Image 1: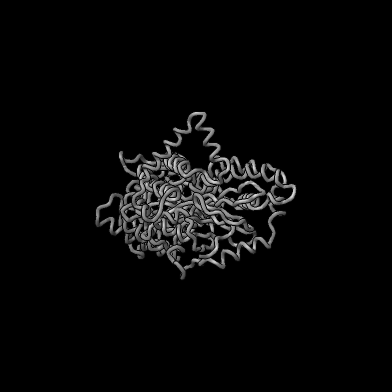
Image 2: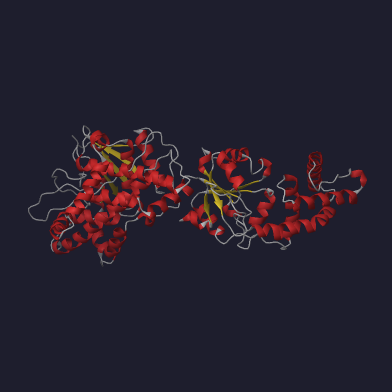
Amino acid sequence: MAASPACAPGLISGPTLPPQPVTFRCYWAQKPSYASSTSRRPRRRRFVPVAAASTRTSPAAARGLDADDFRHPLDKQNTLLLRAIPGLNDIGKALLGPVSEQVMVLQNIGTSVLVSPNQLPYLHQLLAEAATLLNTEAPDLYIRQNPVPNAYTLAINGKKPFIVVHTSLVELLTPKELQAVLAHELGHLKCDHGVWLTFANILTMGAYTVPGFGMVAGFLEEQLYRWLRAAELTCDRAALLVVQDPKVHPASLCHHLILILHCQEVVISVLMKLAGGCPSLADQLNVDAFLEQARSYDKAASNPVGWYIRNAQTRELSHPLPVMRAREIDEWSRSQEYKTIMQKMLQLGLNRCVVLDIEGTTSPISFVTDVLFPYARDNVRKHLDATYGTHETNDDIALLRAQVEQDLAEGVAGAVPVPPDEAGKDSVIDALVANVEAMIKADRKITSLKQLQGHIWRTGFEGQEIKGVVFDDVPPALEKWHASGIKTYIYSSGSREAQRLIFGNTTYGDLRKHLCGFFDTTIGTKREARSYYEIWLSVGVDRPSQILFLTDVYQEATAAQAAGLEVLISIRPGNAPLPENHGFETIKSFAEILT
C-alpha cells in the first residue's frame, strides 16, 4: 500500500502517522492523531460533500456568486480575529520554506493518479461542473490509494492547487455524494481558506519543536482551530449549493423548497457515512434518523454539564462533530438566505443568457407612448419627403404597401389605399402618412411600421432631439451580467436599428457595450412560441431553458414559456395589469435578479 501523505487526513479519525512537512491543506474531516513525547497532540483537518448524477446536464451555475454570499457567520467572525493577530503572516513565511512545499507536492503527485478528460473522465466531469457552479477555477484532482476515507486540498503559493481523494472514499460514496466532497474542497479555495489552513498545519505539525515558540503556538493553535471549525461549516454550504437536481427548474419558491430538501439530504448523507458508514452498510443508513440523532445530541448538551462536556469534546478538534454539521446544514437549507442564493443561481446561472423586452421592462411605457411614438407621428411626412426615392425609403414604402394591401383585404380600420408611384410623390406620401398615423394610434406591432419608425427616430437621436430612457436599475444589471459572462439580448417589436439607437443614446451613455445582439419581429411576433424557438437557435445555448426572458406582457411570457424559456414578468409603473393567477414570478427591479 502506498504510504499516507504528510498530514494524511482521516475524515473523522485515522491511524497514527509520523509527522511530516506540510503546506496549505484542507481536509474533509479530522486529521489523524500524531503521537509525540515532547508536544501536545496535533489536531485534524477537513473534507466536504457535494454530488451530481451522471444524467445531470443543466445545473444551475452562479457566475455572480461571491464567497461572502454563503460564508458562515462564525467563519467571518473568526477570520477577522485571525487577521487582527499581529505578525501572523510573517510567522507562516518563516516556518514554511520552498523545500517543504516541494516535498509535499512530489509526495502527493508521485503516489496518486491525476484525473483528466482521458483519465477517470467521469470524476473530471464532476469536478469541472462543481467548479462552474461555484464560479471558481477547477484545480487538479488526484485519486490516491488509502484505506482511510478522506479528501484534502493542497494550495501552494504561485502554483495550481490540487485536490486529493482517497480510493476508500470513492468506494463509500455515490456519485452525487462524491461531488459534494469535491465541492466542499472547492469551497476552501473559493473562500481563500488556504493561508489560514497553512498556518494551522504548520502549528500542529511541528511548530512546537521550534525553540521558544511553544507558548505562542499554543495560543495561535486555539484561535486557528476555532476558525477551522467555522470554515468547515462554510464549505458544507458550498457543497449544498452544488448539489442541485437538474430535473427541477423552479418557477416558484415552492419548487425551490423541493430542490432545497433534496440537496441537504445528499450533504447530510455524506456526513453520516463519514461518521459511521461503510460500503456494506451504506444502503441501510437513514438521513432522517441521523438528524434525529443530532437533535438528541443538542438536547443532551443543553444542561450545564452537557454544555461543558461538549465544549471539551470539540475545542481541540479541527472539525465540528458530524451531527453538529448535519444539524447546521439542515437548518441553513431551510433558511431564507439559502433560498435567496438559490434564486440567484437559478435565474442567472441556470440561464446562461438573458433576453429583454424594452417597453415596460427596460424602459417606461411612457417613453414609448409620450416620446417615441409622437416623434415618429409628427415627423413621418418630413422624413418621407426628405428621403423619397432613396434605396432605404423605397424599401420602407414597399413594406408599407404590402401591409396596407393585407389590411384592406382584412378590413383593418384606418387602412387607406396607397396609389402607384405614377400618381406622384405627394399623393403617395399623403396615403402613407394616413396609414402610418392609424397604425401608430392602434399601437400595431408590425415590421413595416417599426422599420420606418426606426429610420425616423435615427434622425432624432442623431440630432440630440431624443435620448433613450431606461430604468435606473437597468445599467448596473447589464454591466454586472456582462462582467459575469452572461450574454444579454434585446427582443422588441421595434426594429433592430431602433433598439440600437435607444440603448446607444441613453441618459446613462452607450449601453450597447453590455449587449450581445438584437431581435425584432423579422423572426416572428412576440406572442408566438416559434419566435422564441428561433431566438434559442440563434444565441448558442444548448437548451431553451438556459435563456431567461423578461417581459411585461402576459401573452409574450406565455409564448416564451411554451418554447421552453425561463420567464419573469416585469412589474413597472404604468404597465398593464396582469391576469389573476397568471402563474409567473414577477420582479419590480432588475436588482432583484442580482441578489
